[in-house]
Length: 245
Image 1 (cartoon, rainbow, N blue to C red):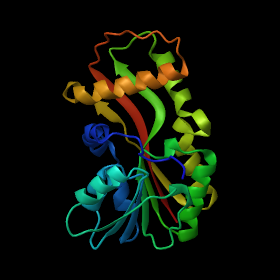
Image 2: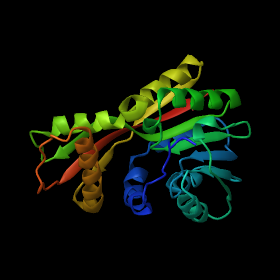
Image 3: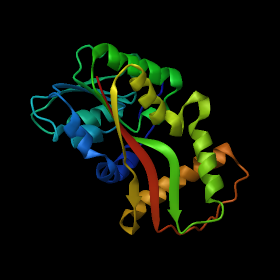
């Protein structure tokens, strides 16, 4: 199996980010779905945040098939979706699935974890099944921290280079996926979906910045970063993508 989902992410981190994710996702893309999705596959489902957000925006009946590498997260996610929804779980390589029985493929914060070849396989699976795809919260390579520091540009660049390790597309992923769907003749809609974090999100800001710096330093150990930095606000740029046959 390829590690392209939420495996290794602690439930606490996923809990911390859920409210920010909910506020950031482009809900208007859901209204553009042409049919009533009855079978939805959630790729890299984590604790089920995407299912909790999307299921209430779709008509019933719904059958959700949740995919993740981490059985702990699958168990949490399966229990957390709203009542009245059929839920199944499956551990599998999400870039090698057959979507033949699927009305909608969806994922959150997934595309930037994939390589070019994995995105091409995922797109082809959607195209072969004629299944619309909604991918939310793909990072696009820009984080703005307030108050600013002189080293922020270098910090951001090092983090983005870390995202590209092992052939992953990182901040280029959503544009590449959009181009692949377009190459197959599909209609693609994109929307910005930034995190806008202020003082009320201090716990999330602290956790996010710790991981941001750790990844940047792993990529570029010589980075100079203040140890006692006080952050009041963060904007993390993402993009949502809806692809339709």
